[in-house]
Length: 231
Image (tube, rainbow, N blue to C red; front, side, top):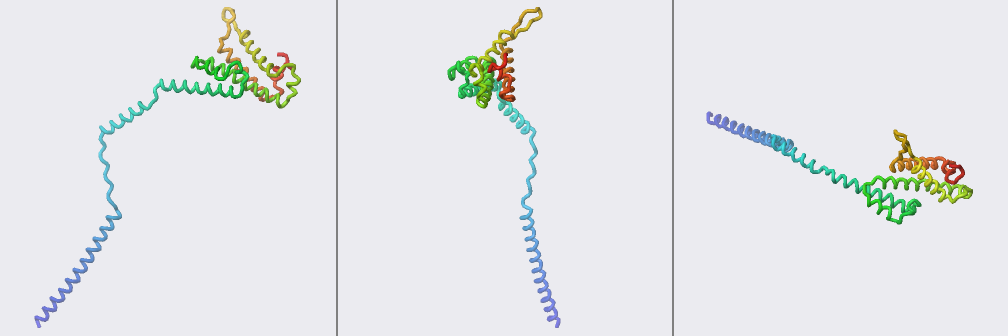
């Protein structure tokens, strides 16, 4: 009887051991799977930033400063670029007048005026002279528009409209050249320089253009050009 009881107890412990081992194995598998899941979701950790090296930072700033200095254009290059840009602008303006058969370039063959200007690069006189020709051409274009809209103006004029227009501005320039004088401190006559007379002529042409554009056939300058009004 004692043997059977002992056998029963040992058999019971054997089954308890198997049960505990199976439970522990299952628990271990669950824990292991959970750890794998967390490692996949979390991913690898971000690396810590490396400590900055003061010498390398200083070297980078010096290199960037050198690059900025080298990339800046030299004054000579800027001057050359400006001169070329001005030349292109003048050339295009002259070509525009030539293409429109400007009567104020009739004394020049095509390309001749530009050749003359190139001989004196950077001269302000050429720019003023071109401005005067451009302003006269603009006034003449408006003048022709008015005459085309009201042809009786030209018919009733005692003069050829184109010649009258040219003579009108020639007389105004003569007035500036001969009569635009002032006295100095000693009462002596002192002539304005050519640049001053050019500026006065450009201003006058601007007033004529604005007046014709605004008043059309009623412009006082239209009447003066066609000699309806004594100048």
